[in-house]
Image (tube, rainbow, N blue to C red; front, side, top):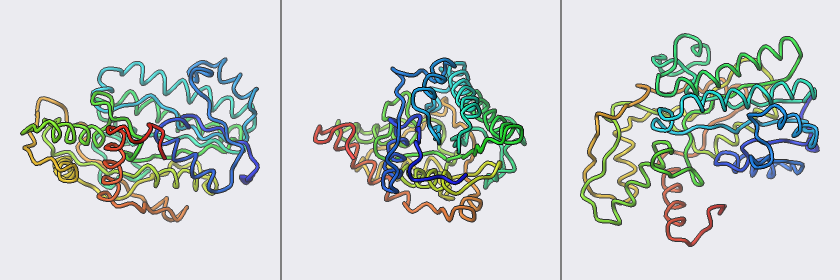
Length: 320
């Protein structure tokens, strides 16, 4: 069944960072019957709450973006919680989707599901060829199990469930908490605060030798909505920019864009995480015509400008 502009779309995590951009993309395309469940009303880790959510709102399509996730520090502190919460949410939602005979279920996975030493660029066919990097393995394994569930439910029950693998995201509205955030917002905050205090140094985690690929959140939202509308394969699909950058180079770039002129000190007692991350994005390009439009430098500048506005108090935390 094809997606209709009149379908009711349930977006878990729609009040979050990526979700805010997804809602904008949906509305731009003319979708108006959209519901975003809030945790205070529906705890998606509880089966009864998910059943009640479906009974009360009767969605046709589900975009499952909600996740409990953070950077390396948060993953080290919460391995059990991250495994349970992400596995439980997906488990209950996919089963409810089967019972409701949904038109489409879109499961957003994680790049952390890939094996630690996956050859670069990461191809979707490599996802089962090893164990994830240990600091985020519980999160990655929980999310990868949902790929199996989506494929199994498609095979046995005919559920049109797809599984997408966005690379590391960044952009305005991100989480800038130094302990729980990912690398880009953490670096931006460190550099700006150090600049304003006149500090001569900032400390960055690890050695800087690891590499990452980053995707601007608005670009990711475009890919997700295109996949909702046009992708119907059981095979997982990467969403990324295809550009790899070392953490050392990234840190220097962020410092420059933030006008921090001091020294960057590397704390090698802290983990680097997975050695390299860079995706093969050919499947998304061929299946969806999806190509990331925002260069890293442009996206970083927009993210920094947004954060500066939040700190100055001239824009609300929900500013668009």
